[in-house]
Image 1 (cartoon, rainbow, N blue to C red):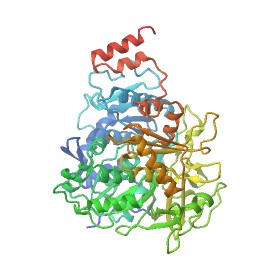
Image 2: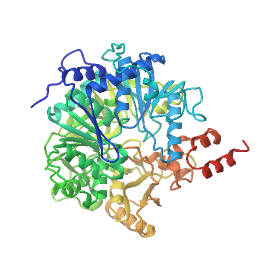
Image 3: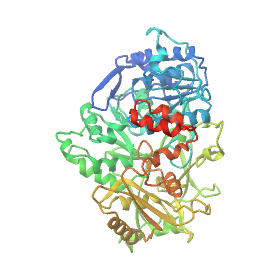
Image 4: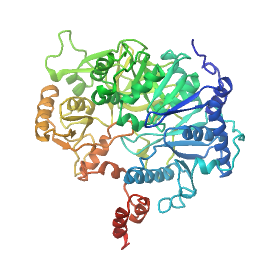
Amino acid sequence: MSQTPVTGIENRRWPTLFELLRRRAEQAPGRGFYVRDRRGAQEFRTLSQLLSSAHRIACGLAARGVEPGERVLVAQPTGFEFLSTFFGLQALGAVPIPLGWPDEIDPFKGWTRRARWRRLATRYGARVLVCGELEDRSETGWSGLWPPHPLEVVTDVPHLVDGISARVEADIYRAADDDVAYVQSTSGTTGAPRGVELTHRGIYTSVEAIGRRIEVDGDDVLVSWLPLDNIMGLVGVVCFALHWGIRPVLMQPDSFLAQPEDWFWAIAEHRATLSLAPNSAFNYCVRRCNASRLEGLDLSSWRIAMNGSEPVRAQHIQAFARRFHAYGLGDHVIMPVYGLSEATLGVTFHPARRPIRIDGINRRALEWEKKATELPPEGAPTPSERMHVVSVGRPLDGIEVRIVDDDGEALQERCLGEIAIRGPSLMAGYVEATVGDEESLRPSYLDGDWLMTGDLGYLADGDLFFVSRASDRIVLTSGRTIFPEEVELFVDAVDGVRSGSSAVFCEPNAEGAREEEGGVVVAFEVQAGADAEELSEVIGELLETHLDLRPARLVDLPARSVPKTPTGKVRRHTCRQLMAQGLLGEKNAGLLHPVRFRGSLRDLGETLQGSGDALVARFRHLISDE
């Protein structure tokens, strides 16, 4: 049975996110969210329960002086508290900024993530942080970590709602369609994180158009392990499910990373029909899923697996389809898509239940002439001239896409250039940082009605082909352009290399040459028991044969050395910075580097309380002379 959306896309009045929750709770009070913990146990709460919790949190925040339009940091793990906090802020007309939740098992990781929150509070002009449970710490903050400025209030939900009746109703702020609903903090793979202002109208039009393209049904079930501070998790799952009235099942992101089989078991147990993930996740499952943990698995209910967030690889799609066909995965389940935060997620989607389109082009023409020249019927003359690019579909309703050159002029089909988009779901803009530089507003930016995405691609027969991030490409002094994702695809295929853990970037230059100038560095993580020297030799020969590429440096790394985003995307620019500082491959280097620690070691010592007396004693010795 087809599900009717809340209101037609042609209407002028769009429901705000809080109105959406309230309407759905009134229409179907027994519907709600499932949340699975790290052990696979799950809890269910109805929309009515979420609505009640949102009212209590809104009252608690109002009592602490939170006002409409005020930005509030939200750092909570995937769960009902996050959902209640997010919608409680919507009720007040405040602007939530969801942030990642740290792994408290590792005190260094927890500390660096909290330091990041502090920097973002300054950057975004926020004075309030609603975070995960503070345990025995005071509501006003954590000793030694949070100074009075910029965060005045650090609280969790138990402190926030203490003494507030479960039946209370907050005074609801009547937000306008074009008011900012929330700020999406980008992953920062190409620089400093940027705050993307998303409107109620933009979210509505995006999830409406996506649902129409994938032919959503009222009986659909959506399973996701994506973190809720990621736009794919928050807009693509939570807001999408509410808008279309379907049942969402939320998993913990780290449970997927530890045991990717859990994703499939959640789909099988709920007879889920929809899910979504970055391309690297599908490859990760092929390489990491243990056959013994898949016995009895039935994926026959899964009809659409949206694959986006990074260039989609035909090899990975085909390997995934082959591996899981034995477990009931149907044909043409994976749907390549393209989107970004600045467009409120969706831009182009491949048609549902159709074979993917793979464009065979001449690699040399693309790298040297910026043209996607089709291969002749007999194929490429040499292996290094053969390249395959997957179509990410056609624009969603209301979206226009064009390819432009460096001057912003539209290019013809099959010419490589920057992807530019226009439509009703574009961001309101970037948060004007209270500190920082204008580089935080790049590489995507608005040029009149058009969003310049900073992504490279081309159009062919109406389909979009996404090739690479413009900031990731390496332009050699010879004039040849190297696309890192293409090189990493070959490196990851070598036995002994940890799949999804290679990084290709421009060689650091002590003289300060521009990022796109210089030689190519190939860094890769080595599997346990593999010989690094032999791997370097195999990789070098493979790249020379298939890509006509001779890297300036091949760098073998221990496991977990390559820094990544929470959804698994490689931070190539961070790798380059680490190499320039001689830290690439050092334990915890990728974790500590982005923080650019300027605080006192005494603050760090305070955060290690409870981590062991001996460890704390060593830190107190280090700081004793301060």
